[in-house]
Amino acid sequence: MSNRTQVKEVLIVEDDIAFREEVLAPRLNDAGFKVLRATNIREMYRELLVNEPSLVLMDVSLPDESGFSALKHLKGVAKYPIIMMADHYSLDELLLGLENGADAYLPKSIDATSLIATLHSSIIRHGRLDSHINVADEEHAGARNPEMEWHLDHISWHMLSPKGVRIWLNSAERIIVRHLWSSQGKPVRREVLIESLTADMKGFDPHRLEVVMHRLRKKVFDLAGEHLPVKTLRNVGYAMSQHD
Image (cartoon, rainbow, N blue to C red; front, side, top):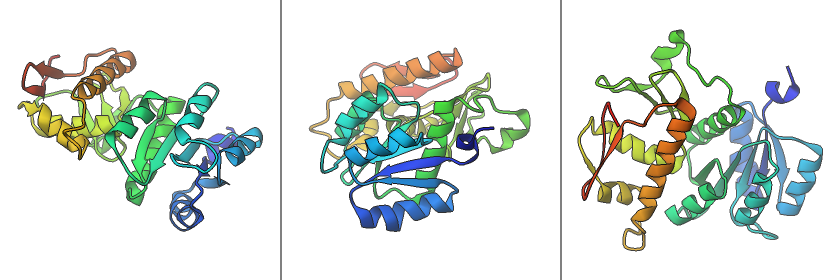
């Protein structure tokens, strides 16, 4: 077993030293991660020349280069997941980050439990480890809709397909699935989903919701070989049901 498997290293790329050292680093250390540090993109590249972290946790706004620009470069060569963090969380930037290859896009105000769960989930998903759940673990899989054969794990951001395949959900997908799941098959209006994704409903392009749903369906089918049990209801919204 490699050292990388035994000890998960996270490279924090953050120019706010107080936030990095007083908030992020202690949280990661307490969760068992080894913390690597960089203050800007240049230092990040230097660090990556000598280390291969399990994950990169990068601020969107850095002094020498945009985090989005660095993300595009890294995703072409990186073997590890990349999670972006921002002071001001907006859906436009969330989708921009995900479109450019970020594994998640988080607000800096995120609580410690959710942050660590996201890191663990991203590392597992990227490494394609433990993609199937054991029967003995079923009781820990999370919520289950009694009318469906799908599970939803509220802690680790995964859905579990009827065939036992874990499907990791990014931030936007998690919000949407959580709404649809709790509706127990009843329609959820598009406006409700959009409002949960952004505070600027007037400036939000409704087609972006369709893009998120399309990509989620494709991801589920590519990973699980099964259709996501969500129906599109014309002029209304979406509903989660047993059959697509």
